[in-house]
Amino acid sequence: DFLNNVFNYADILKTEPGLLGSRTWSGYSRVHLRHFNELDHELNSRLCMGYRAATQYMNSFTTHLTVILA
Image 1 (cartoon, rainbow, N blue to C red):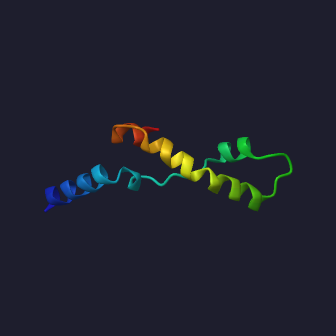
Image 2: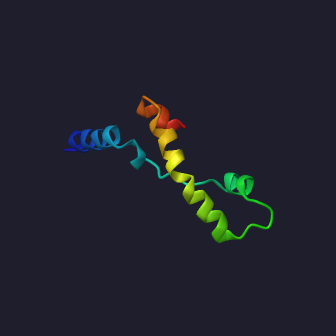
Protein backbone atom coordinates (compact mmCIF):
# COMPACT_ATOMS: atom_id res chain seq x y z
CA ASP A 1 0.00 0.00 0.00
CA PHE A 2 2.86 2.35 0.85
CA LEU A 3 4.67 1.70 -2.42
CA ASN A 4 1.44 2.19 -4.33
CA ASN A 5 1.05 5.67 -2.81
CA VAL A 6 4.68 6.53 -3.53
CA PHE A 7 4.34 5.52 -7.18
CA ASN A 8 1.04 7.40 -7.53
CA TYR A 9 2.58 10.62 -6.20
CA ALA A 10 5.67 10.13 -8.37
CA ASP A 11 3.44 9.76 -11.43
CA ILE A 12 1.52 12.91 -10.53
CA LEU A 13 4.74 14.88 -10.07
CA LYS A 14 6.11 13.54 -13.35
CA THR A 15 3.04 14.59 -15.34
CA GLU A 16 2.43 17.89 -13.52
CA PRO A 17 5.61 19.19 -11.85
CA GLY A 18 4.00 22.53 -11.05
CA LEU A 19 1.93 20.87 -8.34
CA LEU A 20 5.00 20.50 -6.13
CA GLY A 21 5.00 24.20 -5.35
CA SER A 22 2.88 27.04 -6.56
CA ARG A 23 4.70 29.84 -8.26
CA THR A 24 4.25 33.28 -6.73
CA TRP A 25 6.16 36.53 -6.92
CA SER A 26 8.65 36.78 -4.06
CA GLY A 27 8.73 39.79 -1.77
CA TYR A 28 12.06 40.85 -3.26
CA SER A 29 10.73 40.67 -6.81
CA ARG A 30 7.63 42.67 -5.86
CA VAL A 31 9.79 45.42 -4.32
CA HIS A 32 12.25 45.35 -7.22
CA LEU A 33 9.54 45.55 -9.91
CA ARG A 34 7.41 48.15 -8.14
CA HIS A 35 7.40 51.68 -9.56
CA PHE A 36 7.86 54.67 -7.26
CA ASN A 37 4.54 55.50 -5.50
CA GLU A 38 2.74 52.69 -7.34
CA LEU A 39 -0.50 51.55 -5.74
CA ASP A 40 -1.00 47.91 -4.75
CA HIS A 41 -3.75 47.20 -7.28
CA GLU A 42 -1.65 48.64 -10.13
CA LEU A 43 1.33 46.47 -9.17
CA ASN A 44 -0.87 43.38 -8.92
CA SER A 45 -2.36 44.00 -12.37
CA ARG A 46 1.10 44.47 -13.92
CA LEU A 47 2.37 41.27 -12.30
CA CYS A 48 -0.70 39.38 -13.52
CA MET A 49 0.01 40.54 -17.07
CA GLY A 50 3.50 39.02 -16.80
CA TYR A 51 2.20 35.64 -15.67
CA ARG A 52 1.73 34.31 -19.21
CA ALA A 53 5.27 35.21 -20.24
CA ALA A 54 6.67 33.71 -17.04
CA THR A 55 4.72 30.50 -17.63
CA GLN A 56 6.00 30.25 -21.21
CA TYR A 57 9.54 30.74 -19.90
CA MET A 58 9.14 27.95 -17.35
CA ASN A 59 7.67 25.65 -20.03
CA SER A 60 10.74 26.20 -22.23
CA PHE A 61 12.84 23.91 -20.00
CA THR A 62 13.14 20.37 -21.26
CA THR A 63 13.43 18.45 -17.99
CA HIS A 64 11.03 18.67 -15.09
CA LEU A 65 13.87 18.81 -12.57
CA THR A 66 15.11 22.13 -13.97
CA VAL A 67 11.57 23.52 -13.76
CA ILE A 68 11.34 22.59 -10.09
CA LEU A 69 14.75 24.08 -9.34
CA ALA A 70 14.23 27.31 -11.32
